[in-house]
Length: 193
Image (cartoon, rainbow, N blue to C red; front, side):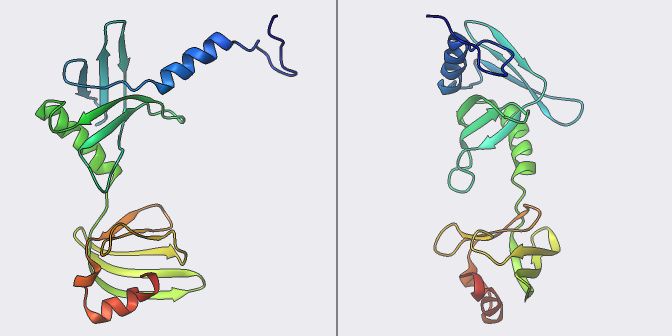
């Protein structure tokens, strides 16, 4: 029994190719200092040369993603392609032991850019207006003003006292322990607790 061409499709459905792609997606490839070489690129990004027993692969630029960015920052680091679909190339089990110090530094720099999250030290003002909250705060990176939607997804409890706030542009801000804020600040923040 042959495969039929779908209406409007230019290519025949290839089951073998689909199975191979699925197997590759489901395979968890561990990246270590023994099978990978990371290097800085001219543009300030990171490239990857991966050598395995079957074949060598080169990636001009990679994306570095934490699997557990808030609970285990150095474990299970996903190395991905930078294209729109961002396919996983492999996983570093432990950044502190599975790569050399220079590689760790390079990958941490990439993640610091990706996960830039200023710490809110002081809340000067929060103004609620037309379904938005306008924040005026002091962070560990300096003064900042940002706007969030007045819905539950903008402020997330990471623990009993730790908050993550996401603004309209997708920037993230953290309050490590809101119980350490003044009574005045807590009153302004009360809408979100």
